[in-house]
Amino acid sequence: MSAMRELFVYYRVRPEHLGQARAAVSTMQSELRLRFPGLQARLLRRPQASDGCQTWMETYACEPQGVTAEIGAAIEAGSAWAAALVDGARHVEEFVPGVS
Image (tube, rainbow, N blue to C red):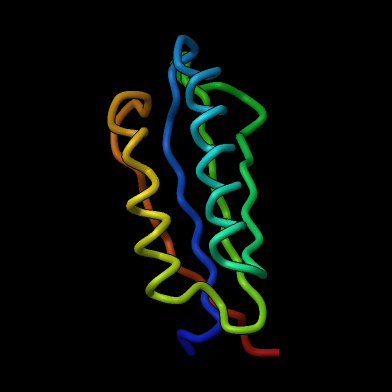
C-alpha cells in the first residue's frame, strides 16, 4: 500500500565534501520538516568508508499518511545540492510495511 511508504536515499560523499554535504542535508531536512508536519527525516552513514568515501543514507517517514508523492517531489527538488557534492548517483528506494 503506497499510503504508508517510506523513502531511503543513499549515496557516496568524498572526504573533502563532508562538511558542505552535511550542512546541505541538515538545511534541506529542516525545511522539509517545517513544510510537512509529521515528517521524520534522518541522516545516517555507514561506519566504515569505502574507497575513501562515506556512504550516507537519508530516511523519510511521515505519520499518518506516509511519504506522499508531494513529499517525494519536494525531497527530490531539495536535493539540487547533491550534483556538486555527491560522488556518483543518488539512489532512491521505497519501502512499505511488511506483513505482520
